[in-house]
Length: 211
Image (cartoon, rainbow, N blue to C red):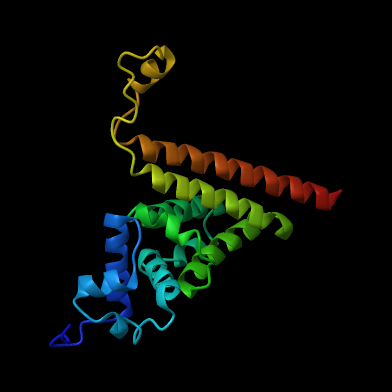
């Protein structure tokens, strides 16, 4: 394959090509990216020496770099408002390429962009008074909330088609809410429930320390 007339490669271009392949095919390969970009596979390694693992890190960076972390650290505002914004921002980024979820969750988080996103959440849990020993469990709960909601963004509308089935409760409920905004409304319910749980956990921890 001839060399391109100009250097068209960069880590970002490679990551975006990988995301495009994942969106269409569910996964990516180095040869697949090279074919899409019209270059030799070996030339990719000049930009991503870590191969597929490094590309996954770059995919995360492309997805999360648009999130402004500064508002989450604005301690003059209630932590619950900033927590809700963190969840919405994280979910919105993941919902751009929900097909990438299975790749992203199988690799440890070691890129700075994603680590800083998670650090912002741990700082919010500190503010809420969540004991350090409970924070990983709570963050895992939030990950499940966000990733599940991002995956749900792929669902069709309507989601349920009960015609002909003996499911009267489902049919009655679906007629009042099975619409394009269903997923986002469900996300807001989940955010409110999560904030209430975190608030209660923080108060219980504070009460235990005071007793």
